[in-house]
Amino acid sequence: MSKSITDKEQQVTYLKERLQIFMEVLDAIDPETADLQDIDNLIGMMDDLEDKMEQFKERPEI
Image (cartoon, rainbow, N blue to C red; front, side, top):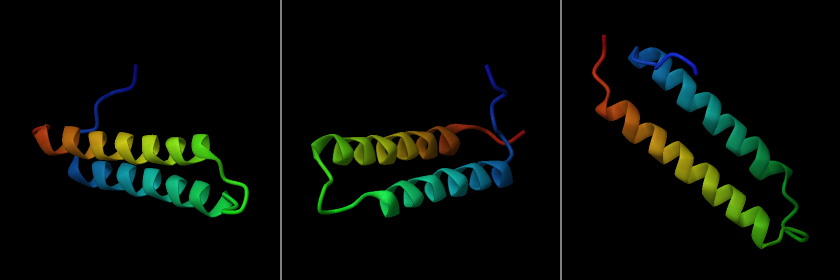
């Protein structure tokens, strides 16, 4: 298991990296051939990102 990120700068960097991955996946999807599973995956990625943001907000900075 990885160590918790408590430093605010590291948290922001982590979130930026995850958002960049989301944007790359979004750009790679062809709107003409995207199916429901593709949309569900995107929604899941956004849900995971939102959950992580909430976790970071609740974590005290050490």
